[in-house]
Length: 478
Image (tube, helix red, strand yellow):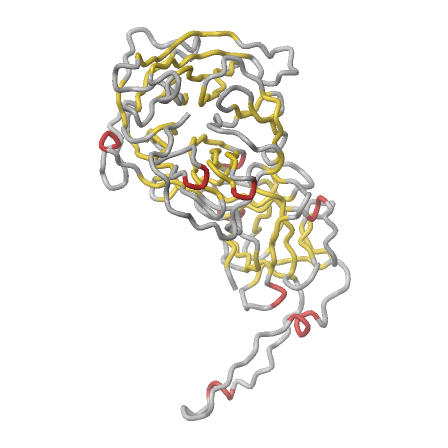
C-alpha cells in the first residue's frame, strides 16, 4: 500500500480519453497488482488484501485468483516449477505504523482449480521494526543469471534490496539489505543488455484522480547499485527518468511489472489509481514497453484513425493491387507557368475516382510507393465485442471510407474482402514493438505468423522474426 496524498491537488483535466489508450475488459479492479504470470494456460495477477484476477488472453479479466496471508502489494515470479509469492504484512503508515514483514510462500500452480494448487510458507525475508527509518512493504522479484533479488520499501525510508536463494525462497545466509534509492515505492527491477534497471513509483496515491503517482527509472551495472538516471542523478538522491504518467482519463500509474511475450514483444502491467470511466476506481492496465537510447519508456497502442501503413523494410505503403488512376493534370501548368499566373488548389483524388475500376470481389494487396491515393489509405479501429490480447483490442483494418477489409486467406496469404463482417480472419492483433514500430498479426490462422514484407513489394503472412525489419510497420498520418 502507498502513502496518502498530503494535500488535495487542483482540479485535473477531465477531458476525453486519449484515443491510443485502450482499456482492458471485464473485472479489472485491483490495487497494487503483482507482475502478470502464466500458470496452467491462464494469466494471473494478485493485489492488496488478497485475491486476484485471472485472464485467458490478457485482455478480458475476472476475479477468482486466490492467495492466503492477506497483506499488501504482492509480487509473483516463477522459478523452475515453483511460483514464489512475496507480500508484506503491516507497515504502510496505517494501523501497523511502519513495522512490517515481507513474507514468502510458494505453490506449484496459481489456479485454485488445479490439484497442484497449495501454498507453502517459506518465512520472513525482510522486516522493519517501526523505529528505524524504513518500511518493509512493496516487495518485487528479479531473477537473472541464476540469482534471485528482492527489492522493497516506501517513501518513509529507502528502497532496499536483498538476495534470496532461488531454491528455497529464503534470504541468502549473511546477506544484509542494501539501500539503493529514496523518494519512491512500489519498486521493480528489470535486467537488459548488462544493466539492472530499478523502477519506482513516485508521487502520491490513494486519492483518485488527484493521485500524482508516476513511474521513474534509474540503472546500474550491478544489482546493488549505484543507480543513476539519464542525467546522472543518483536514485539515492531522488533521481529517476520518467517512464509513464497519467494519460487520458486514467490517473496515477504505479506498480510496474514486466511482461515479455513471444516475438520480442514487451509490455508492462500496472494499476491506475483512478479510471474516470469506471467510477474513478483503481484498475489494472497493460501498455507496450519501448526502449529508447537504453531506457524503458511507455509506448502506445495504435490510435484509431486513417493511416498510410508503411513497411520498415522497404518504405513502401500497403496498397490495394489495383490499376493506378491518374489525377487529371496538365504538366505544362507546372513547368511552363509564369510566376505571375494565378495559383489555385488541386483537390486530392476522391475515393469515387480511384475505386471506379476496382473489382467487386476480393482484391489482393501489395506494397508500392506512397501517392496519397484512396487505395493506400487504411482506417484502423478497435472492434467492439471482439476481445483482444494483452493490453490491445482486436482491430479491423479497412480502406478509408469503405467496408473493404484486410483479411487473412485460407492458404495463409493476405488480401481484402468487399465488406467487413467481424470474422476472425478480418481481425488483427496490432502490438507495438520495443523500437516503436508495430507488428500486425491475424487473429485467425497459424500462431506466430504476422504481416511481413517479402522483398520490396509483396506482403505475406509468415513467421515473425523480431530481428528483421520485414515484419515491422509504421502508421503514418496522411
